[in-house]
Image (tube, rainbow, N blue to C red; front, side, top):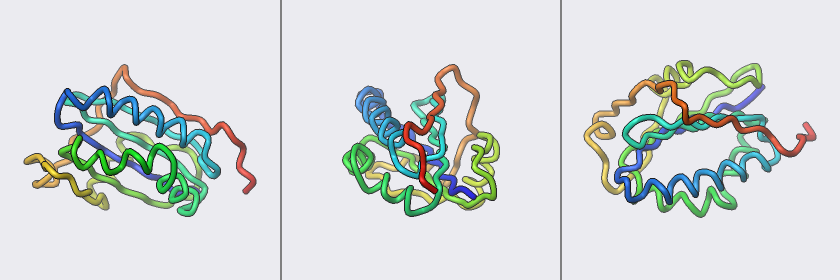
Length: 148
């Protein structure tokens, strides 16, 4: 059993992209070293859109990651940096990561918009583009072994 978490963010200005990428890499490293992390992927799409797909042992493990370290410190900045943010979580019977297409299906069906200070027209309309294959994709692997 695994909790799957998917996030899609669009950085609203190229001026924020380098800061965003730096913070995203620190958050990814934090995830890889977090207890209960099973694996993940990062994907960059055109127009400064970024997807994260992670698997966790349970909601408690994901919340511990989310509420600490680099991830917690960057969250308030996303209100300013991003004009589109959508998240979705679901439980599945197996720990393998779903495809980006499956993640998108869940995002369309169950995704929740997150607050941003400058929402785009797409955010207001709840339009979520399909993730596109990209040369800029990174696989995340757990660096610590779970006890569970």
